[in-house]
Length: 378
Image (cartoon, rainbow, N blue to C red; front, side):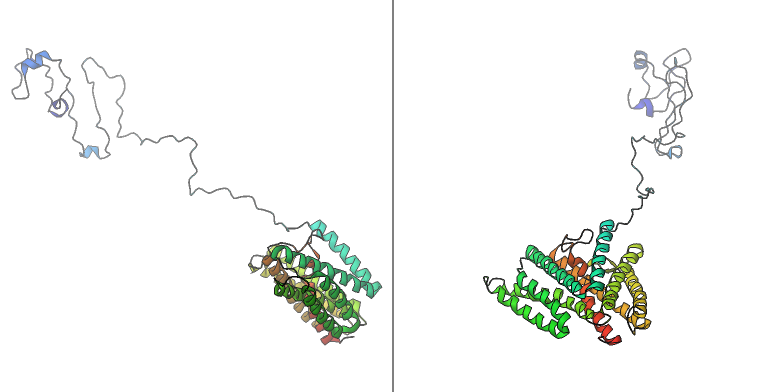
């Protein structure tokens, strides 16, 4: 088949020389060659590509048989009318913009063993109340023991994480003496004991090599002020005639403030209070702490403190919420610097003793001062 078989104009009905007449004249016809070759079928003219009938860029429709001895067996297939080919995909991927099923909501977690935390809290509360209202001296001993354990936790973490060797022996002895001096001699005795404890830290550290002396004694003086000195204000509250009720008010307001912050923040908290220091604390939690503490303060001042009034309790509760929050953030700052979550593991569900004293220690001088201003030293 040559190039003219499909492109040349067909001669309708001509199949070579016959009795119907001579072959058409023209250069394209060669009679001898036609007699020696097999006659070709007449093919309808195929329109040139790009015509009006070929807008779809589809194949031209063919009609009729290609050879005489063929007869059509089926209707011709019109490719111009056929739908576009769509390949079938195996395990098709979901469309990017298709809505994905929402993951099931996750239940908020408290982050600690609440059962153990509640049990330990109730046990500690029973010990404190029993010693507070039975024999005052026993309660002072409980405070001194808590101070010594807190100092041990703090100095241990400083040495483990930072290599700071704050001398524990003078801190423990001086801290216990500081609490007793505050109970016996008041603020004057607490300051004298604090000064002597700092001096003992400086001297004790001289028995070791001088490398790291400055950072060790600095950490020791800080620990003496942070733990035992602030705790002496609890012992000083106890010296008043209604001392047990003042201490109970101090403890109740601090616990209520922490509980209000936890409950409201866990349920409604969405705005971080100090994400770099304590990611779990929220502004809503702070509002809950203030609200709970002010209500508790009004009730305690009205019914537990001699000559106290409800409006004084509102101010007291507001101050407690602020100091407790700052104390909690302060210890969180220390733990972030040390790279730890808890100061210890002595109290299941709570961490260590220092993890329970973080909000109590800075709140003690605030409550002591406000009670002295409102109702006197008693």
